[in-house]
Amino acid sequence: MCGIAGWIDWKEDLTKEKVVLEKMTNSLIPRGPDAAGYWYSHQAAFGHRRLIVVDPQGGSQPMVKEYQNRRYILTYNGELYNTNDLRQALQAEGHHFTSYSDTEVVLVAFIQWGAECVRHFNGIYAFGIWDEAGEEFFMARDRFGVKPLFYADRGSSLLFGSEIKALLAHPGMKRELDREGVAEVFGLGPARTPGHGVLRGIQELRPGFRGIYNRHGLRIDRYWALESKPHEDSFETTLAKVQDLLKDAIKRQLVADVPLCTFLSGGLDSSIITAVTAGEWRSQKNSWPLNSYSVDYLENERYFQANTFQPNRDSDWIPMISKEIGTKHHEVFIEPEDLFAALKKAVLARDLPGMADVDSSLFLFCEEVKKEATVALSGECADEIFGGYPWFHRPELLNAPTFPWAKSLAIRKRILNKKVQQTLDLTDYVQSRYQATINEVPLLPEEQPWEARMRELFYLNFNWFMMVLLERKDRMSMASGFEVRVPFCDHRIVEYLWNVPWKFKSYQGREKGLLRKAMEDLLPAAIIERKKSPYPKTYHPRYTEAVVQEVKRVLADPTAPINNLIERAEVERLLDSLRLNLPEDPWFGQLMTLPQLLAYLLQTNMWLKNYQINICL
Image (cartoon, rainbow, N blue to C red; front, top):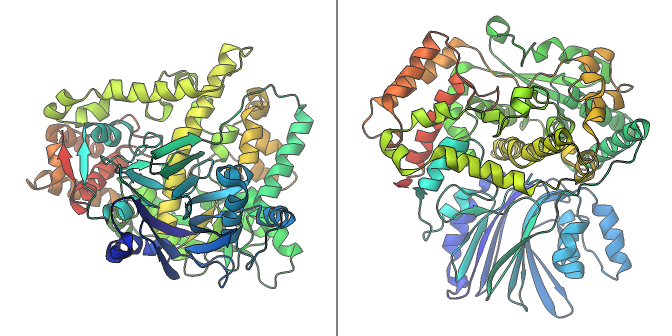
């Protein structure tokens, strides 16, 4: 994994802009701590920060390749999981390779197939390629947006980078938050409208999209979308295909020339990944055990509060599954003060306010695991494709005519001060974003209304909730130069599951019932039957108190930029509600309740202040 940056310019000579390109590229050092590379011409300039995972010698970037008297330059962030298959296919077409890296395969695939190369890829990626003779820039992003790619179309020039900070390092980029940006932060945050960069002038290439930029301008189109069709497999055949697809996806993602591990929470998803990985580990006759890692919080056994959404602690289950599978397990414990201090680090990693301590804990966790490993496999996306969240099962959430993880906008609207509320209609903005997504859903004409609604709900999750979690995983891990792979996000699995009927997915009335049944021979019955429990969060009063005191300090600071947006009396009411343990509607799913909302406001203030953002309403 890596960080990429650069730009195309039709007016300026970019060979004279080396200082700017280096500044843009160096902003991504955490993503690629192992090496740096640059390439310049009059019209194009590419920068690259490398995290070495495969082929230390042959994968250097930017990569330059000549073919039939044309020169092509690539800067690439990602991993292909069908590298060997593609290399053989390209060799059959007469191409020769000088390395075993997937980087060279990506570049040669573009030389052979042009913009259609992405249809051949199985992996996670974001990249840019400059066709020097044709004076044309091509960029693309993987089907689910596991890897990020931001850009700014400035007419006669195009800037791009793995993260927003790379674009902001360019002196021509303004740091402006307009009304639409405020609506993104307060109406949808920590989610974002697909393709929206929040700051004015910055956009993100949507998952499954590609772009071509030349002297005629920028043209973007979609190269991949879910296709709806009747599911004709029997339940038994469906079980077998799910098992085969998932095992193959996991095994394909074990290629690395650096230490690899798994995240293991004792839940269904991470246990499946770890069990398959451990089996492959043994078949390869490794002389050392597979390392697995979990995260918890200091004194969590004392302060944990069980509820229907989080019924038990991971630590009650991890020893059982680790022993059964045969991993060398490591527990990472986070202290309340460190968790609070990392809220700012998480903002700087994400370039936006995020999931508060849900982000900062992952940041600290990855930072610790990085000391022993460089690559991990994690269980993200299983809930989105198999139907694991409460809103797939609770009618009042399933049928809500809005995003079910943020069903009520009341608290979001009350937080904004009267002046801001008068300049934007938060309800209309959120509803328009919701409806635009619903309008994209490829429905089948013969589907019953409830079947169509389930399809809509899955589509909403793919395009919104899953994107938040994938963004979180990428930024918090890559901030430590640590790569996390997500096998459940293999497009072959998602394409197949998209058309599997709900009665199969909810087998025996259980969340992820199909997945449980498909993998029941792989894991102990207790793990197969364990009720879903999400990523752990702290209940320690010292963390909550640190958040409360910092919120009070910010409210009292006349120079705090967030005070230009929020209603102080409403935030003080929230502080009282927290002190009295009064319930509030979740801010964003059950993982972000009142303590996380208050921390989100702190992160918003940190973001506005540290990025020196000008609020333009």
